[in-house]
Image (cartoon, rainbow, N blue to C red; front, side):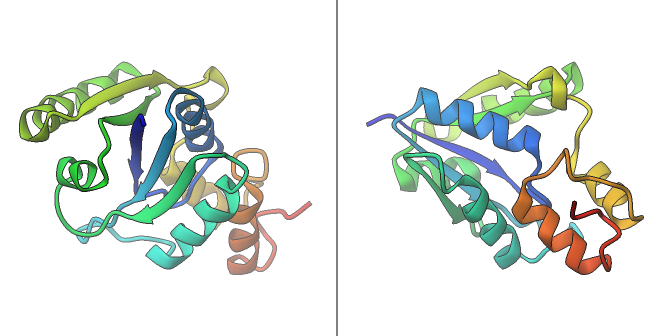
Length: 164
């Protein structure tokens, strides 16, 4: 069985993430979406909320599961799950330059390979940071995020993130 991990904090999950995960699901027998927590980062949504949004959104994808990554190295998480690949979406060359050293390190640590997928051009400008900023200020983010994410934004912003 070919198993891959799609890691990220997914705070929040947006359509660019979903597109990469769906493509990974078509390439691998099993995809584990590993929701990470960086304790130096301030999150808008709790780990439990991020897991719930990802599970609700990705439930249609056969062979895809969502798990908390927990503490520790991504390479070790992959080894413990029997995953031979990490799938990362790239929007720009800056993403590539950021991700490449980590890909080399992960391969050196455990032998796990990193597969880079170029993001769909419809989503190359999207980032979770931008979604949080626009949605938090009441902008319409409905075309950029899955319904599970939009519901939570609308609830938090008294409807200003646009539900319809």
